[in-house]
Length: 458
Image (cartoon, rainbow, N blue to C red):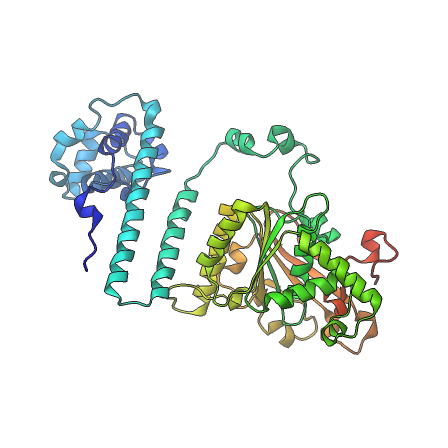
């Protein structure tokens, strides 16, 4: 059964008057070209002759020549295109009835909107045709659709230029909050004092990559942060955890034992005393009340994550998203190699964090380089496994390093960990020490940082 092509029954969206007025405005005052070219490209015009006129305007501007009817007609003639745009008479008609130039921004916006609608239709029609043809796997088609629509959103975001006045007006808390650091809206605290002091917390729209070699405690640290955010007594926020490695039951077990400070091995074996059972019950009651949401669906992809988060955000005050971990996720569509696939995923998470205005904490594996490196085994940015654009897309990159893993015979290193902030787009980098309680798979602040004599100490 054939699918009716809507575009054959009805013309694609356009506004030819707006296109003519934009081109006419440039010919009336060629200084307007910069304002137009900052937003529009030739492909945003629906008529082929309008595209050609705009491209020849760009050629003149690039050479520093004046743009008017005569110079534009001459440029079109040099390219053999004057007749294809209906000659000089059409160029003369472009500014006929042209309203005042202060409306140019509105005309540009109309042209841009119609161009976006046409692209959406094109992608949708192409998807329908591919589905009917059945030449490709359904998952490949879905991946291509996902990539195409995310690219359309990316194009729109690149053109969202704002003046200082607009930025301050839209800033939460207004001008007073923007100028007064004590009143500025801060990021979400992680519970780790040195890290929060150095970064200001996890901020909305930012991508935080937490990487380490296996068994260093990536998942443990991420779950500790999740519990702190969701269990904050003053301002609890929802946390969504997507685990591609562990089941929901295993995640819950880890969080319960960490919160109750109960040895995981004893819990799994069932050798618990009365105090431990009571502590687990108390931790469970607190956890049931906290807005924690876990997903362990196998084969989760970007589109799945996006749709689930949109639904959750409509119901909850979403504060943090955790992905465990990047290299276990499969990209949708065709990729030449794994590096391109991972790069596509990291870029997708960055775009998603900006759209949803929520920080993303994405766990990542490291290559074997730290283990083979003589002397200092501390990770560095170049150790990111299948890095591609991970480092480029991330606003922050941190590594977990526990020297006791490499030197198990040295007693003084037991229970010590380092969180290495290797990249921070808007702040300093550095190292901070943490305590690692292996029995509970839990990281904590050192006593020197908290002033608490009962806290773990170096």
